[in-house]
Length: 308
Ligand code: NAP
Image: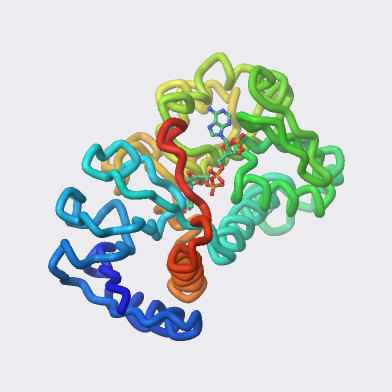
C-alpha cells in the first residue's frame, strides 16, 4: 500500500478526495489517501503552498511532494523540503489560462469597452485592425505562456514571446535573455506569464513600460510581483498605458483601499485566470506516483536553483 497524504488547504479536501481516488484506481495504484498519517509512514504528499503543513522534516520516507499549483514561489525556498518537488502542469490549467488571455486580448483588440460605453443612436464606424496588425508580446514561454502564444498566433496576432532560454514555438517570434527590451518595444498588448523569482520581480518597471506602444494594454495573470505597481499606476495616470487587467497581486485578496480597485483603467479579476481543476490535476498526480513507483523520472520537477 502506498500512503498518500493530502496536504492541500483543508477546505479543498472534499473536492479532491474522489477525483484523486478515482485517478489512483485508474492508474492501477494500490494507494491509501488520507489527510492524516504518521509522518514517518508517508510515501507522497499532495500539496498546496497554503497548506498548514510547512515543516517537512518528519516525512523521512516521502519520495516526492506533488504540488497542486503551477506556481511554487511560496514553497521552493522552504529549507525543510529536501524531497523532490513537482509542480502542476495539466490540461485544465493550460486551457483555462488560454481562454482567459484570449478573451482579454480580444477585449482590447476589438475595443469592446468603447462600444459598451456608447449611447444609443451614436453611429460612428470605428473599425478595429486585423489581428495580424496587432502586436502582442507574451513574457514567459513555459507551459502556459507557450499555449497562450500559440492560441493568439492561431488567431492571427503578431506574437512575440520571450523566455530565459531559447525556444521554438510555432507561429511565434521567440526572443530570449537580453532581448527583453526588443520584445517589449512597440507592443500593444503585453501578457505576463513568468513565475515569481528573484530574477523576475519588478520586471515590468517604469523603463520597460515606456517601451510599449502608447496606450498599450497590460495583462497580468502571472504573479503580482512581476510589476512595479507604482510605475504601472503612474503610466496609467499619464495614459502611457491605456488599460491593465490584473489577476494577481502582491497581497491577495487585494486590499480594499488599493488604488487598483478604484482606477477607471484597471480591471481586477480575483486570481481566477486559471484554477487547478481536480479531475485533470488528479490524473497528473496519479501518473507521477505511478512513474515514481516504476522507477521512471518524475514529471514537472522544480529546479530549486532557478526557483520554478
Ligand atoms: P513554466 O512552464 O515554468 O514557464 C515559465 C516561463 O518563464 C518559462 O518560459 C521560463 O523560461 C520563463 N522564465 C522564468 N524565469 C525567467 C527569467 N528570469 N527571464 C526570462 N524568462 C524567464 O510556468 P507556467 O506553468 O507556464 O506558469 C507560469 C506562471 O503562471 C506560474 O509560475 C504562476 O506564477 C502563474 N500562474 C497563474 C495562474 C492564475 O490563475 N493567475 C494559474 C497558474 C499559473 P525558460 O522556458 O527558458 O525556462
